[in-house]
Length: 289
Image (cartoon, rainbow, N blue to C red; front, side, top):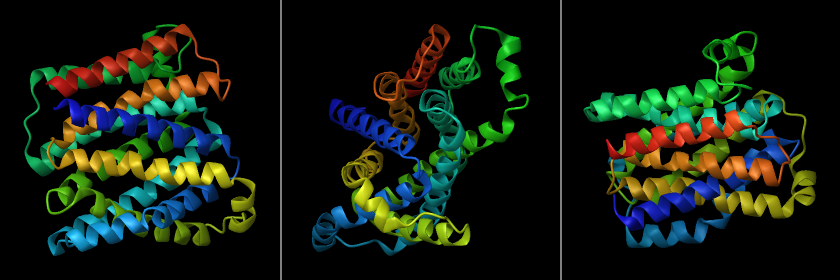
């Protein structure tokens, strides 16, 4: 992986952590996620028009765009459920730590990429970090006990992480056919329309226009950063294997922990910090496998 691609992915990781923190901060987060998707579609329309003039939307990529749109829309729905009951510092490491595991498995299925012993070791390290992330002490019994009576909340975390990984693989398929950034823009249009539909079906009791007036700056920042974090990763997939991209993006776990500590005033104990760095170490092992 080149230094340029690594730098792009680090920027994407920071942006991803920031827009997640904004979503956690806003009480009406389901509607907020819908609006930042709409903001992205509007803000990046000039870029999409420019890219359409310099290149075409490949017909072969449309099916991957449809599948990615469905996956990403369900991801945002699950993410809204996650932040209803779980803090950013608790949910985000599990959410992002799940993604490289699932991405590695899916890459093996879709791309036929062989997972090395080093890659398997990295996955095991990530799983260990996930198991200990919400514990008060490094206890195997306590780690396994986190699923007991808490699966109702954690299922949304694992679902969101799995959908994020699936989206990465599908985006990689699309990026292999055309401009990754243009591909992702069309996916965002579909995501916005899909999220609007979900809001209508679930009868979301929040009005959009008052929310725009209430959170104008967070909506603009969220709209800018949510697209940057996604489009940058897809751009990297044009030259870098999906598994590596998905792994390096998980550095956002550290940024999210710092944001949770400094901005959201969430408490982070020693075990949580240790678990975060275990996950990051696992991600690095996977990255270099």
